[in-house]
Image 1 (cartoon, rainbow, N blue to C red):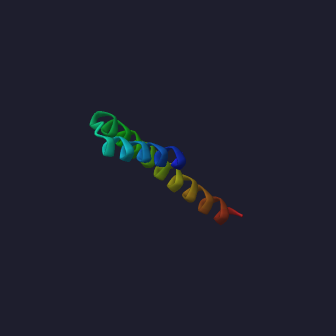
Image 2 (tube, rainbow, N blue to C red):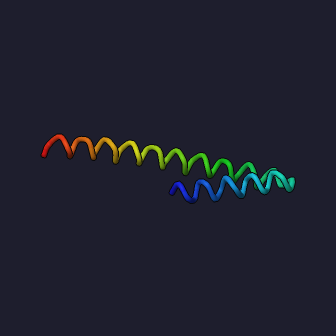
Image 3 (cartoon, one colour):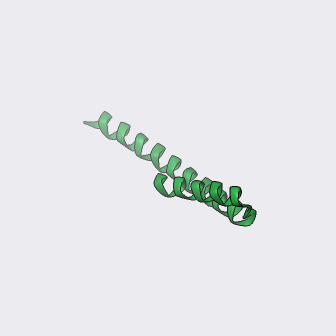
Length: 56
């Protein structure tokens, strides 16, 4: 998921340089959402991993 966030970020940067502001805005919004989902899933898996380690 982090890979796709970085892909959309690169697309947004390239579109911004070329002047496609609508595409750049949409791509950066998608990249933000994907990065936020990645962070939430990472924190959840980290907490689950710590909880699992404590019960063993």
